[in-house]
Structure formats: C-alpha cells, structure tokens
Image 1 (tube, rainbow, N blue to C red):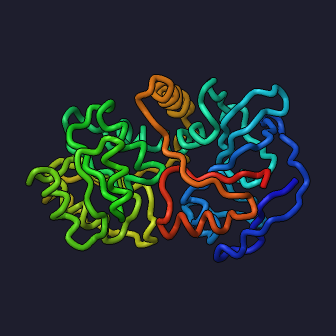
Image 2: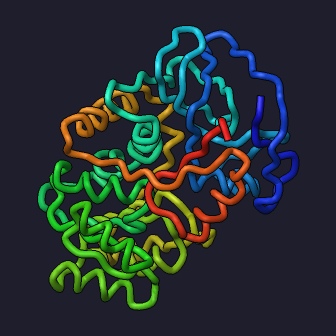
Length: 317
C-alpha cells in the first residue's frame, strides 16, 4: 500500500511517500480502507518530535481516518493514533464510529478530533456559563470554525472571533461570531476588551501560546478562564501563582488524548455533534484536500496559516 512515512525527525522533507505492507489488525482492532485522512496541527509536532507524547521511528503519521471497515463494509471514522497517512490503517474497535447517512467523509473527520475538541472546550475545560463572553482564537481553523458555531447552542453570550486576515474574519462572522478582530498579539488585549463592549472577557480558547496567550490572559475578567489547547507558536508560557491569586483568573489545559481514556467523553459528544450537523445547526468547514503525495505541502500550508477549516489527504492520489 502507499503510505507517508517518517524515518527521521525534521522538516516537511522527511515526509516520504513509500510502499508498505498492509497492516494486520491485532485483537480488538479493525482494518480500515482509507478514503480520507485528517491533517492536524499535532502532526507537525509529531514530525519534529516536539509533541506532548514522544514518537517512535519509523512512523506513519496521521491520527484519524475516514473509510470503510474491511470486515463489515461499514463507513466509519476512526482514531488511529498514528498510521493515518496511508491507504489502509488499523484502529481500536472502540475508537471506530459509524458515519451517519448523509454525512460526508470530510465532515465526519472535521467532527472527530476538531469537533470533539471544540465541544469539550465549552463543556469540560472552559465550563462556559450562560451568557458568558467567549473568545475563539484562529476562528477560521478546524477547531475555531466549529467553536464559533457552538457558542450559541452551548449557552455563550457574546462570541468574539480572532483571525489573521480579512477573509478569515469574514468567515467567522458568517459562521455566527458577533465580532471578529485581528488576532496578532500587539494590542490584542485592548481589541478583545473593545470587542466585548469595553468589558473584560470571560473565557478564551487559545491554541497559539506565547504572546497571544499573554495578551488573552490580560483581557480576562476576574474568575475568567483561558483554555490552552495548543502551542502553535511553539512558545510556552509561565505563570506565577501570585498573579493568579491577584487576578482570580484560571488557566486550564486541554489535550484530546485524555478523552481516549474516558469513552463517554467521545461517544456522547460525537453523537451530539453528528445530530447538530444532521439538524442543520452546525456546518463543518472542510478546506483543501491534498493528494497523499502532497502531505508535506499540506503541513506547510497549515503551519503558515494559509488554510481554513479541516484539511484532508486523499490516499488514492
């Protein structure tokens, strides 16, 4: 089978298209013939071995796929951990979910890691209360575009989006944000407060870290929360406990991997997301689809913020 493999850590050039044997599922695993592979920012960290979990070489990257179960012929979306950038992938049977009729592969993949992350940012990590003002950074991205839309149905008040370009900010407004502002760190705290009608904000969802995190923290109201769910800037932040006490602010972390240890955190949330899509309440923004041979370009485009929505790989090309 065709697959993208990493044999050494490094830049996008280490993503090489190779021929490998079709993987053999172990007990409690299933083999999926892949129709689409999801591309996530975490994949770029895996490629350089700078992710939260250390990687082992050689490795086929890719933590999620959509396709057809070889044993039952059922259309599914599955969490693979690794191995997704390929024509075939194995996944635990417990992390393999039927795709409802009428939901396409790209939408199903958008709802898996990104959709579940957005859902848990509201319900689990951010614990957004009725009427609270929420800031969604990178609002045109895979998680952000869904988090903007989930604001109202999750009970949020004012939804403030940030994005790097006018086109991306326009998309965020189209998806339901009350206001969209430039997400660059210079003057960001002031822009967020202004966007919230002069009041500090209640909750911030941040996947950038670095200066964006610091500016977002400064814009929080007392008892406000900032949820760190990514480090796209590759700049980690440090906080002193005295500062947290003086401001009565909360910093929470969210790593999707921990949901895998708690099946109900996936099953119930994914069912809710699928139901919202089928009811027309939620639209997955599916961005570009790249050939499997273009995996390196897909990761570069993602890192350089050239993309919107969910990125996919087509293993047939």
